[in-house]
Length: 316
Image 1 (cartoon, rainbow, N blue to C red):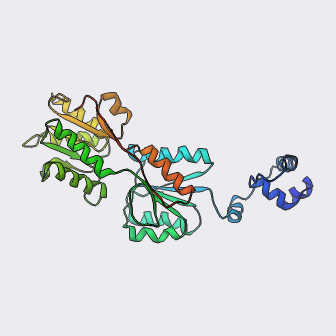
Image 2 (image 1 turned 135 degrees about the vertical axis):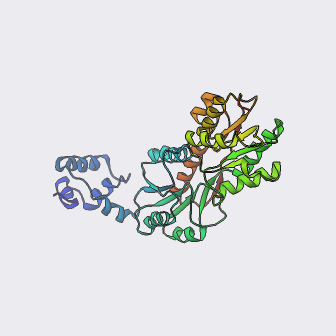
Image 3 (image 1 turned 90 degrees about the horizontal axis):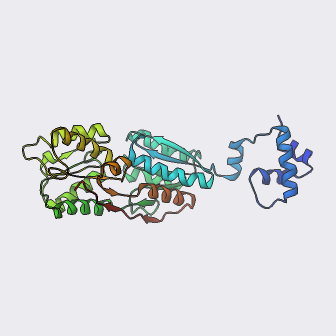
């Protein structure tokens, strides 16, 4: 099997020149670059990427910790990362955890083992005290706000968005408002939703919150509980447009009109919500993913806020 010395000898250049060509160094004349590339093609030479990575001290690969795939919110974040990775010729390793703390730490170990240049946390199950020590091995960027100086973040102000969504429903005349979330109160996002609700409406009736909602089927399940409550809510804030679609389908199946009998607002401006005319809170997650990638590549610990938008359509 040919090696870098064979290429240099046949091309009539130094080993360092071959190395520069392999590493796309611009400081090589076009004549020498063409001669080296011709020999590489003749010998069908493929460089040992691990050896090249060790020399460069980078892998040009980043990890994305995601609790789930096939989830619109996380898919949008990943889409943003992939947009940027294609532009910058980086590879992306998706690291699903299902919110398993041990799996999450094993993924972070890839930084320590020099398998990745950095890691983007789309969501997390471990406390920051367990995560921050890994930042000495490579860049870590979160898709939520953190004041830890070692961790960069691309984030949106979720609490403000929740307050604005609930305020919008209140201003439309609703006082019996329910909501759905993905996780229970172990989730920071869920805790912020509770806090925002209480800020606008006061104490939350226990029957007005349904967790473990990720899909259209979950929306149907949530609607079956919420819409048969003793005091039926007149508005529901769903934690995703797919969940909102399930709520809408069940509401229509029991002859409730939207928005006359039930107002619905979703999240993330997904195609199904656009098609059905749902009002939605767009957290611009694709942009969050793009910015998170940029922070990783720049090895930046900056805190970048991405603005959210509330899009009002006929569902409220």
